Image 1 (cartoon, helix red, strand yellow):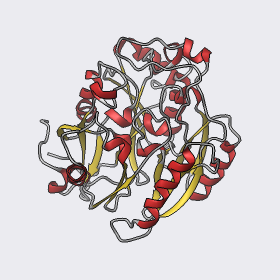
Image 2 (tube, one colour):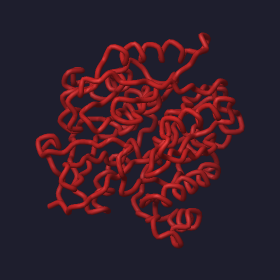
Image 3 (cartoon, helix red, strand yellow):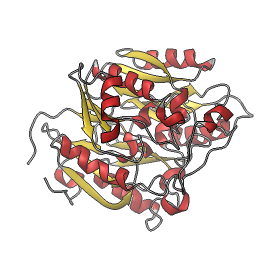
Length: 374
């Protein structure tokens, strides 16, 4: 199957909401020494737990390189669990959301992927590592492994965590990310919005000013905002006036209170608190990392962009990160109220936020397919 060079919207395709039924989920085995402490020793059991929780509801496609295939299979139980499938596709890191394919559907039971240009969250301007060739090439390989056709977005730089859609014509992004100099400096805001409409099949784009404070992705929207369902969403929030997130959250809320979605609805907003105590890199964690030349280096005491909004919806479940913070239980209650038809599964995520993201960043949903594409 060759890459497609048309636009999904022209072919009748659009991006469904994450809360719609899935066929499966992509995950990637974590091994990058500069992201995962001790070569992934602490993160791998968490990825294995995610794979197990998701596989109870839908298919899991776990990417790994040849050297770690046996380990990934053993720790996830892939040989025993027929829903966990190992794909030997090497990558530079484990963030399936950002470098994997974004899926679109056409209402006729067909699905296709989109391969964006990936440059490690900023390329030469402020990218997090210099060699990202494997990540950039992975989306088309992932689609091919599932026998799905794939749109080639050319030189348009975008990551899957930088937008959220409601499945009914609305996308939400942040200005901090999509207008950053390391993404698409040759395009105006209006041109970027037009590309989003062409590829995601949406009619309206809502631009939030900011994301989570200190988010090294230039403040991806998936760390600060998530749709619960059409017309209803969660927003990361702080009531602590001394926390920089206090002002950022209020700037985002001001936009959401004056905007309507593509259907003309005001979006009902649920405030989801950030951890009450900022999560910071410890000296022990820093000592467990090994950085390559050209890779962004962390510092002891630096604040990490911890957010409960970075949850993942699989069929029937909400996989919710926990930080050992007093707000953990409150986040569980809020998500349980918002998703009363799903089981909220709290999972300790310290080793994942140290890597720079969380459960939504690690996962990429695959919609159901009822009809073969040609």
